[in-house]
Image 1 (cartoon, rainbow, N blue to C red):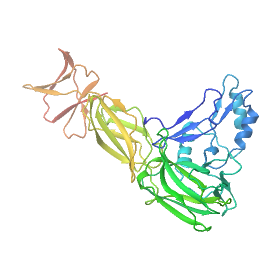
Image 2 (cartoon, helix red, strand yellow):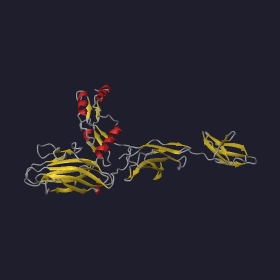
Image 3 (cartoon, rainbow, N blue to C red):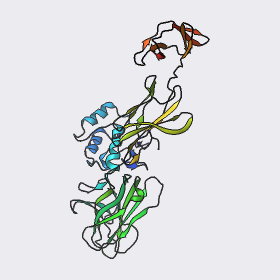
Image 4 (cartoon, rainbow, N blue to C red):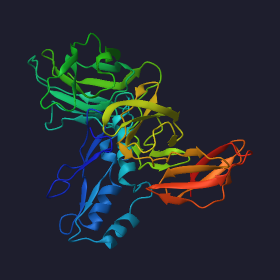
Length: 422
């Protein structure tokens, strides 16, 4: 829930890769990534790690295509790390943690169509028995999910299943897939959120019974789940006495109303810098390319409501706020927006714009006495006739009773005066 956190990396205590690279997603679509490999003497040596990564999946839509490696620094050093990196295959990339998380979020969590041409594409299946198991097959149209069941007694408990978590865009409308049956295998599709402990599963399609062995298309509404991170369950069970009752599923797709739109990722706001010329200068890091614009919000640090003080294009990452009151403590935050709506707000940063001294003018008979607060020792007096070209006013300022004063001859050509910090 914290806007400054993009992902969570998880390590078991010992061994560090006990969760075997599992990937989950929080309700708001941020990845939780477990360590897959450990560089650890007597547990996983350099050569074993190199072989494991070079043999890993090349499917970017599957968690199996991503390997976080924990280095046991009591038994391995940078030379071991360099040895591993040097011997990785040419199509293996070593990336920074933030890039790693973004790739998983975009390619795994936000993938919305699956043709199964090159494998399971991130779907998890049960394969614990010789029969009643789900797996990928290349025999059906170049690739499909096969959910098998060999029991001859009809029942309502699943025999085989496959599951996958997907980050649904806010404009998701429909789940569409193709399916066919051999024998009397029945298919059920269920859905649940990803965060509730032991949540109830909602049935989207209840034990679809085949009427033909040909491929047919099925669609179900996802309108009530748009914008959520959910897990799909495709379950198969026996509908009758047949023993050859496999169910095939292919071309799973999340349909959307127009192009798939996700709310922009949370930007990272850096420390504001205030100056007397531009006011408060804000800069931030854009964490994706989805923002069409950024909106800048401000409130008093002491409390109150947030108000929007400006906006910039999604390609801009800076903004200057000159509408604030000088010497007042403010909080700022930034959020992206696009056609899908507003993204999450950034982290908050506070700043106190420097207080501007007030200038007072006292008319004398043949002179003017100008005064300003004594704390403004780095300010100098300037004058102008046109508010465009300012020149320094000559004279010596004196400090009396905590205020600075300068007396200058009355000059009919000078109509305006101001203080400027140096």
